[in-house]
Structure formats: C-alpha cells, structure tokens
Amino acid sequence: MKNKSYTVKLKNGYTYTFFDITLEEARKLVKEKSGKYLQQYSSPSSEKLVYLLDNGTLVRTDYVDAILYESLEDYLVARQTIINKKLPKHPFKRIIYTAEKGKVILEEISKKEATKLVNNGAKLIKEERDKKIYTLEGNAILMFTKSGEQNSIYPSLEEYKAVENLFIPRLDKPIMLGRNPYGEDFPNHVDELSKQLFRLLKLPLKSMDFSRRSLFEVEKKMYNKTICDEWTDPLFLPLIAYIGQVVQKEEGGGWEMVHHEKYDTWSPNFRKTDGKLRLFYKDLDEIFDVYIKDFIAIPKC
Image (cartoon, rainbow, N blue to C red; front, side, top):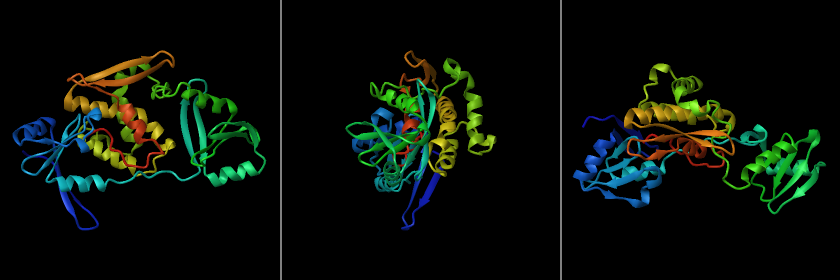
C-alpha cells in the first residue's frame, strides 16, 4: 500500500506520522484487522468514523477517503493539537443575507464601545429580555445585549428588522439565502466557481486537480487569514463547488438542487452514489462562524 505520508513534529518534540488512504483501503483494513469502532471519537451524522485496529494502528474514515495513524496516541495528539481559527477583533463587519433587504452589512463592536455610545446620547426605542435597541446619529441602530457578548450597529431600523425576521420562526432561513445567484443552474457553473476559488486564494490553477491534497492547500490558505465575513463571503459558493467536484471525482455522485419556495432560494445538495446526502454549505456555515473559536476542517477527510 503506497500512500502519501505526512510527518508532524510538535514544539514539545513529539513526532507523529499519518497516511492518506482510500475509503476502499480503509474498509479493507477495518475488516482484516478486526477494527474496533470508537464511538467517543466518531460522528456518524457527518460520516467521520474512527476504528482501532488489532495491530495498534487507527483508521479515521470520512465520506471522501480516510487517514491511517500509527497509534491511538498519535491520533489523540493530533486531535489535541489542531489549531484555532484566527478570529477578528472588534470592531469588525458581519454580512447577513435577508429576505427583505438582501445583503445587510453590520458592525460588531466591543461592550466598552457600545456602552460609550449608550452613555453619549443613544435613544432607547425598545427593550427586550436579553437586549436593548437604540437609535444613533444618522438613523443607525445599536443592538446592545445585556450580557455584553454581542453588540451590533445596523445601518437602519429596516435592516435591523430584516435580520430579526430571519429568526421568526427560528431556523427557518435557508443557509443559501442570497448566496447562490445561479439558482437551479448552479451545477453548470461549478468549473468556473472552482477556478474563482483558486484565484481568490492566490493558488496556481495547475494545482486545481480536484484531489484531496488540493483541499489541504485550500484550507491552509483559507485559515492563514483572519476568519471574518469580508474574507469568507466571496469564498463560500466557490468552495461548495470545489468540494463537490473533489467528492465527485473520488466517490462519484452528483448535485441535487433543492428549492425553498418561501425564500425563492436554490440550495446545492450533493448525493453520493451510496444514496447519502451531503450538505457542504452546512459545514461551511459552521466553519465560517466568527463565534466558533475552534478550527474545523473543511469536508475532505
């Protein structure tokens, strides 16, 4: 079994090696080496499954391929040493897509700055259980949370209401709202979107080979910058397209477009040959959330 290996040396001197293997190779190893399923490290909903083999090695599978570690200890060290995301410091901009006002750009500010605005004449117009709403100069709106964890300035009351309406009823808004200008025709644009991704990341087009390794390069470039909406918003759709192309090359399958009538939005789902459905946009929505500090790998392994 000739597979690409990667060796990682940590600052404390610990060194471990892992290997890229195919799903077919992983399944064969699990069967031949009496693989013991480790439920505590697995996530069946996202097809991340972990098995300890009888020779002491460990396999972690996913819906594209798999990784082989030389020991359980190596795997646990790898889990513990995953990097954190570079998150923005206040103030920073947020981008939220709404049904009524389209793309809304708001500014997140610190509790200290929000308190300063309140004390300098902001007019209270509404108070709720967990937040207060103020008007500022120029008709801007300040949402001041009582916990102080999240304080936002909206361009106008209409845009604030448009964002609030996304959560009534809660979780009703499709993730793809405002993010897919191609609509049902998205699958016919995945090649151009993939090229767009590599251009945005300043990666050479010759490395766009739709391999799992290329996704490591994409991830490296992506996390090299602060994860903020201004950076990730233009990457969102191209990244969905490229991940799908990689999975299609490795595993087969194809796109299934789903229409959300209420918001007139088309979402690109991906159906694998085994019938399982992948919603890459759900993974990316979590990866690009500025309030989730942990590093989350893009769907590839």
